Length: 309
Image (cartoon, helix red, strand yellow):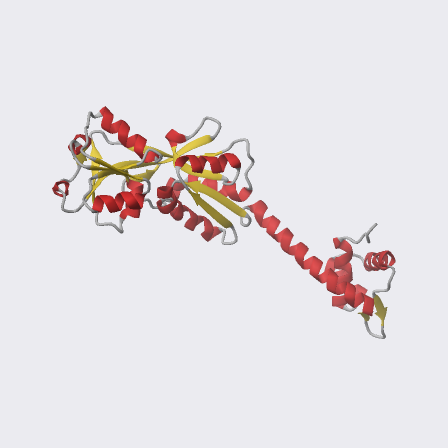
């Protein structure tokens, strides 16, 4: 069986070495001198060696004591660091948190929140996992993300979803398009237009298809793309107009596109904060969830066309 030495023993030996005697060490650790002497003696008995010898003026480590002190100081430093980290974890100021989000939300909504979160908790490590709607929910289900931000329509009943924002759809088009003279557009204005659509794996596609069908709109030739950048580039090149949520617009600024609000009807998608109620979250992750859930009261900015609720 190994040597039975605890943190209390290590602190006593280091305190005696640093103070040069038992009286100062006892005062430093707020214990009686007799208790300090017994603790060091207990260590020596368990080790089978003397750790200190007394000179005319002070207590100094023996050769064995010096070796033991090297180990004791290292172990105490590691222990104190770990406990400080755990204390921060309990307080929500250290540790880690992970969030999954749709690409458009990871690029536009999440950064504003994380900037505020990290300003108050600079030692917290945050991971953002972006992906399509099913990927985002899979992260939460598997536990590789503490929470997710996605659209409400995709959330299964096994997960808990809380509505935190809404995102209004707009029409995007090349600047030379005839729509540039309009202040706003109706969905029926899209009739006959060449159209750049997100492919069916995108959560945006379902909203657009449903609205076009409800309004009886028949489009011209349709070009499909999977990601926001591709839709922006194709639209800027004149391959068609498109309908996108307002939170997507900041990701299209590299392309030469213009936009107008879509009305009659006004279509908004609900943005939800999602987590698995069966999986306990750390205090750090709970603090991030609380900030997201109350982002409206924090007056955090959002791109035009979106708002906290």
